[in-house]
Image (cartoon, rainbow, N blue to C red):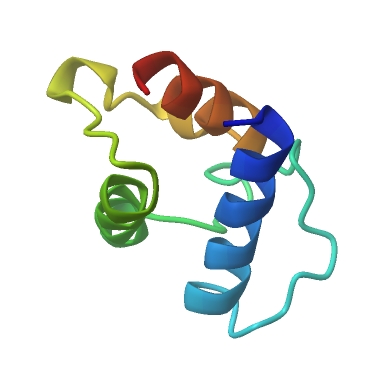
Amino acid sequence: MQRSDVVEQLKHYIAEAVLDGKEVGLTETTPLLEWGVINSFEIVRLLGFIRNQFHVEIPHEKLVADHFANLAVLSDLVLELA
């Protein structure tokens, strides 16, 4: 699994499921929490997507804000746990 593929799949999911299909301005370094792109409810949905799409279960101790800061950090976490 390539990092760029993980970034793109997460980006597409967030654009479709959270941003009503609008990917405008969403990059791998967009501050997801800081800009309010995702919230706690969206994180729960995102965890389900990660589990289904990448077959990765993110453990409770990894559920910290730093891991959801942007798509780059989140993708690195997914790859680390894969």
